[in-house]
Length: 170
Image (tube, rainbow, N blue to C red; front, side, top):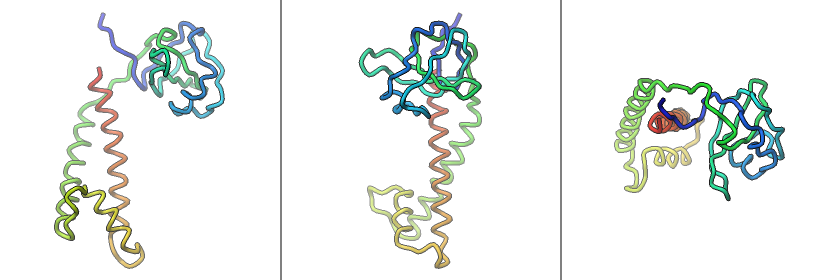
């Protein structure tokens, strides 16, 4: 049998409800729980999806943030769950996204160099943001549209990097 560490989006089952942290408010906030004041423990056999993973700040064990089919959330240690089903990531999609983003980034660099060379320490995105600050979006310039595109590009790139990181850790 091949051992695989539990990852975000995997489906798990609670096997020891004594490993639940129902009042670890600092970790609730850190891991993105909806209710950061407290959460009711999941019982034995509850099936849920992992939405965040972190390390206990004192004990250094791995903690998993879970959400069940009803939207309830729970924080539990690694000893309290077992993998039911892992989520496979299609790397071809990640590769296509990265290729497209590299082309967009190259086009932005070309545009930045053609219009007004950015400072040596500035990326094309930083340059565009600076340029946007100096123009009004209502005066006919395309800078506003470029900013919206860059913002979407950054969101997509961030998601692609997260997916790539998950795939590489398998």
